[in-house]
Length: 454
Length: 166
Image (cartoon, rainbow over all chains, first blue to last red; front, side, top):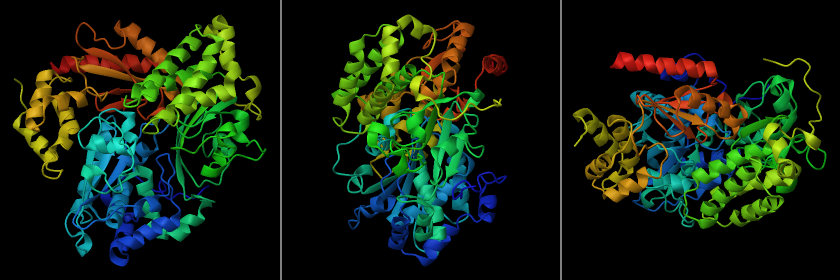
């Protein structure tokens, strides 16, 4: 049983309410920070913890905080990115839904460290019912003196507001999020200037993911040094993984990043193995943008070592044979899944979500979807596969924001590792309409489970 | 022309008060949600012009936002809008069959509304419920682990509610 820092109390009955949360030790980090630490000391602890941004990019959170410009007389803002929209990812939703006070507590401590007196939670518009849960938690925290004016007699004022988006994946990109928060289309800004210098309403701003902010609570409680001892290498602390696809136990799991991918998929503590006793074909382990890996490369690195559930091991081998931790959206495909069809749905997703500012992304995502559709529906040509490869290569790195890369990578990885399946679709279009390609050489080295679970 | 009730106007003013003076444009997306809810589930150009006047914006500033975000309906929709996710993780778990089943059952295509004005079917991209797939959004809430039986039950539930509410 791995150590849990975020979800340990998530299933205590009534934990959504302030009284229960408080009784379970909630808001201790606020008391500790406000009474015994300066804002800079809080930032220092986060730096020491090695906490990496949990939204997908994995940038060190403490370093991001230390970039925040602090000109005299200019307000600074903390904005919490709750625009969780990466296919496969539903961890922030879980955290906000089941233990909302953890996020509010983290926001209070983080706002104190950064000097934000007005902090916004930008939440995807579809999570409409979670807005009520968060606003309830905010009201309770305010009634109990943890928000509002002169918190704990320190002279520090803070209000937290929840702002709903309205359906746009791109608003998870931090500058698009800020545009949206300013009441505009979610078009990413050209960087620099970075939000740390010129963010919300041109003021210095830090944008952090929900899970990142929540992790500040245990960091302050146990110290950054202790937090850094959990996990391995530069993958410190715990990480929420949202697991879905063809597994027995889909859901959100907190792991300490020392377990192997194999254990995560097959042990009963986590995913409980592949559903219906089938075999593993492939997996997209970090949300739809990260490279898909066939079973053999997923479970073992190219060097033949066990692949582990952490930032370094998942990316071992680069894009040639590795993938990424990303947002922790772990999508498992069994032997009956079609990689072409799966890639088509992702290409459609990125075409739908491209903001349209940069031509490589606006046009390229549409082309990729059309070509994949042709291949999937038996109208593909052999040259289409090379054409797809060429288009994705021309999108990657040629756009203002990472959506272009995010659209290119899934297509590139699918062709890189499953080219034979694409070729089979082109060569046998009729067969491809009626059955799936199956496992071929990507065979899961593990035996089929003897007793399929319901 | 339709206008917000006093209660909704109060809510709008509360939203505007969150932002620094002069930054009321930030209220646009939340206020459009309120407007859509209030005025029949969609945003007509009159509604958008009204929101523009409330927030002291040019109408184009409202149109360009309303057309960007997928949750705003720019034409009338049914009383109940089924927004079924079709992205990878839902597809893996059978969303294609669910969408086909709803189409057959309601006799409409994606994007259409039933003749009685009760149901609209939309397909949407990932809503963050991948572990509970297949799923759809219905109003404020998600309906998850969808099966054909569940779809039947949801349609019955909506039909019953529509009768009770009339």
